[in-house]
Every structure is written in structure tokens, then in C-alpha cells.
Length: 264
Image (tube, rainbow, N blue to C red; front, top):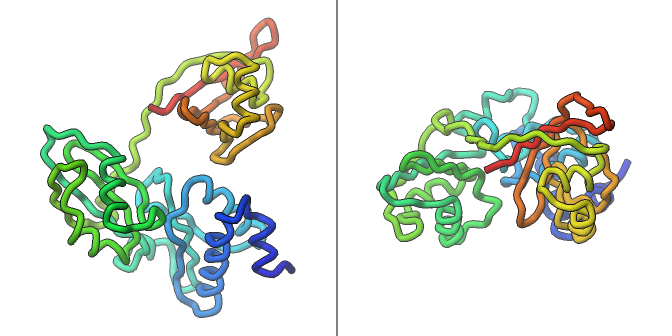
């Protein structure tokens, strides 16, 4: 059986991943050996993929939770035998929800709120999803920093805010909007799908993949011949993000039909 150091080395993409993966294994040990719930800080979608690979390899029991349905950033939780998933939404949950209200005639962006939070000295790993709806901003943060945020975050983008901590159940589901169109490809190779989805030439798509600008299911992919599965998410730095669905249709020339959902 591999040691913790060997496990981390086997699954980390680079040195930056190693502390986060090591911390996950420490949290798992705490839940198992001390019988207490334990959780990570917020992980990006990319880091969640790496974490799942490592934890699945050692057959660990865990739950990823972002505070609301469809959340992108999430914590990884390890629960002892006496706790169930209801603990994640209790007053002891590792995540707290904060609601900020502002005058509706002022426009504020995700960047405005994230910048204000970072300006308080918080690390990115302490903040989960940020959702803006009708003069309100809902923010998921680590419970331990929630009182500090409520007391000290007075504005975003020079607009005054009123903050309050709310129940996690009051957090809205993440709103996903996209534009849909249909196209066709000769095969489900990554280079061909990227070319079709982003209206690029095949050679340009190949260059972007080789340059490390393309991610498949949240991880950088340098292989143009990688097969894209139905439901996969592809991101191209500078061009956006799409989800690819096979339509199950084939043209007379043998081209496969795909549905491209571009996130907006």
C-alpha cells in the first residue's frame, strides 16, 4: 500500500496540487480515526477531478458539496459513521451562505464581489460560488470566515452592500444559461470537435490543443486524438466553454451529429 507521500506524488499534476491532496488525506484520517466530520477548503472543478481520482483509488468514502445545487466550487467532506448527508446543511456545515443586497440600478459582476472578498485578505479557497440575481448576491464561504465577511465586507465595485448570513437552504440553485446549435463531425476526436464547436479550422484547433489552451472535462488535454464522450465539457482559453452531446444521427457522408451547448 502506498504511503501518503507516494499517493500525492502519483496523482498531483504539479507541485501546486500536492498540498491540497495531502490535506485531503489528513482530513480523511481525521474522520476515520477520530470519528469527527472533516472537510477540505473549496476546490476548483479541475482540482475536484484530481481529488476524486486519488480518493477513488484508495476507495475512500466522501461527498463533494458546494452549498447549493449545481455549484461549481465544492468542498470534499468525510463523514464518520454516525453522520449522514443532512449534516452538510446543518448549522455545523463547513459551508455558510451570505446574502448581499445592493441598489438594483447599479450593475455589479462576479469579479466585483470576488475582488472585494480577496481585498479582505481571504484566500480563494475560502470562497465558493458567487451568484448575482436581481439586486442580490449569494456567496458560499467557509463557515469559519462567514462572521468576518459579514462584519467587514461593506462594498463591491464602489457600491455599498448590506450583508447577512442566511440558511444554506435559502441559497438558489446555480443558474446555467447556454446557446444551443447542431453541427457534425467525422469522429469524436478532440481536435475535430473543438474545430466544429468553436468554428475553427482543424489546424487552428490542433495548435490550440498543443499550446495547452484546451481543457476536456476540466483538465488540460494535449492530445488531439482524445475521444470526446457525450456530455463532456470543453473549455478553450479565450473562447469560452461548451458541452457536447451526441445526437445519435449520422449523415449520408458518415458524419456524426452533435449538439453544441455554449455557456453564456
